[in-house]
Amino acid sequence: MSKNKREGIVYSTNPSFVYDDNETKPLTPAAKMQDLRVMLDKKQRAGKKVTLVKGFVGANEDLNELGKLLKTSCGVGGSVKDGEIIIQGDFRERIMALLLQKGYKAKLSGG
Image (cartoon, rainbow, N blue to C red; front, side, top):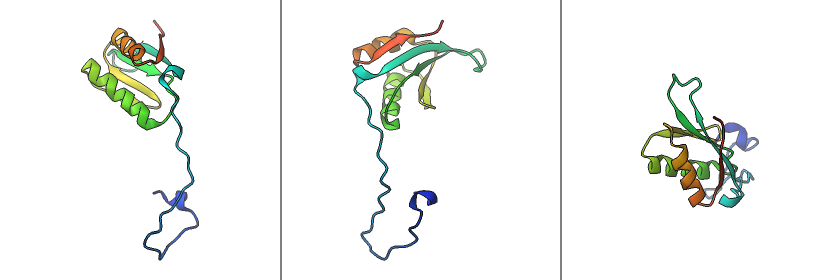
């Protein structure tokens, strides 16, 4: 736990004390409420193509889970950064089919 999250509490002699930070975790809307954009990108990537999935709203755990599902179904590497899923290679059609099958509202975007 970071120091600034427990501001004002220095030490507790209670062995069963658990600090409650009163933070609420963001709720992830249902898949049909998501509005995802799937696009191809090669800018600032040394000419290599990547497929980006943008527009996910919700908890980071759910975004990471969706990213892992897409990476394993395409059989390639990728990552989740800054609220977007990056899949190595041009897999727009396969990702679109998978997202629509899972109930997400998705569109192809860009050129």
